[in-house]
Structure formats: C-alpha cells, structure tokens
Image (cartoon, rainbow, N blue to C red; front, side, top):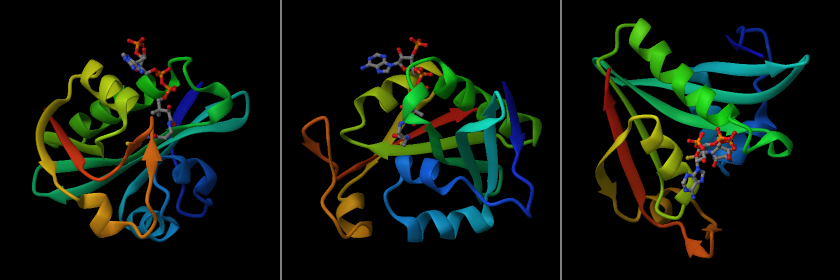
Length: 150
Ligand code: COA
C-alpha cells in the first residue's frame, strides 16, 4: 500500500472522485488548483484525496474516497490521517473539511481523526447542486464544517 501525489501528466481517478462529490464540474474545477494524492494497492488505485489551499495557512481536504469494493477496511482513515500529516509537513496551521448533514459515517471518521465541528453552511447543497441528493434517508442540504489545528 502506497500513497503518492498524482503526477501532472496522469489522469485523475474521476470515478473515485465522483463518489465523494457528485458534480463533475466542481471536481474538475478544484482538481486543477489542488493537490491530488492516490492510494495504490497491488497495482490498482483504490483511494484518492485532494488538498486545496484556501486562505493563508489553511488547506482544505476537498475530496476523499475509497473504491466501494474495499470500503470499511481502514483505507479511508489512512487517507485522512495522511492528508493531515501532509498538510502539517507543508507548513499549514489549519486543515478544514466539509461534509453533508446526512454523511453520518464521514462525520464519525473525521471526528475520529481529530476534526472538530466549527460551523454549518446552511443550504449549501441547495445553492451549489442542481439535483436533490439523499443519503441515509436524509436529504443533503447543509454543509457541516470541521477543522483541526496542526
Ligand atoms: N459510527 C461510528 N464510526 C463509524 C461509523 C458510524 N456510523 N461509520 C464509520 N465509522 C468509522 C469506522 O468505524 C472507522 O473508524 P475505526 O477505524 O475507528 O473503526 C472509520 O469511521 C472509517 O473507516 P474506514 O474503513 O477507514 O473507511 P473507508 O475506507 O470506508 O473510507 C470513506 C471512508 C468515507 C472515504 C468511504 O466510505 C468513501 O469513499 N465513501 C464515498 C465517498 C465519500 O462519501 N467521501 C467523503 C465525502 S465528504
């Protein structure tokens, strides 16, 4: 298992990125400006995360995803922990992440990795996404913001 930065001449793993974010347009926009890292296991790319500098000293984990066939085996936690360490090594003071109000397991994962809730961006998903999204039987409407000092 190896986590490495995607080279600029490599194609980002769009199928994985779309697991975390249903909008191809939004993903393509932040992938240009962000740092994309992939997790390889036995020669296959099975995970991805994207870090995007947002404000001075702050970087945001804008996408994290694991291939559905190997979810629940600890890879997601390894990716989030790698992203935190990576941001720290790069000298950032704060790492942020946002997730939907309905993303129960993601909220568990991020808090297990040391993130604390800082705010709610009300109606974020209504404003930024055309289609209605449901998860765990709950409509995704608000963005829960989480942050961690490095
Ligand atoms: N309550 C408590 N803990 C929970 C939980 C719940 N309901 N659901 C998950 N967890 C915990 C797990 O127990 C585990 O913690 P542990 O190691 O302390 O037991 C941790 O969350 C994550 O487990 P892991 O196996 O590393 O997760 P994963 O490999 O399945 O990856 C995602 C997690 C979110 C990256 C993956 O499910 C995924 O790609 N989902 C689709 C894309 C997505 O939603 N991305 C995030 C967008 S905000």
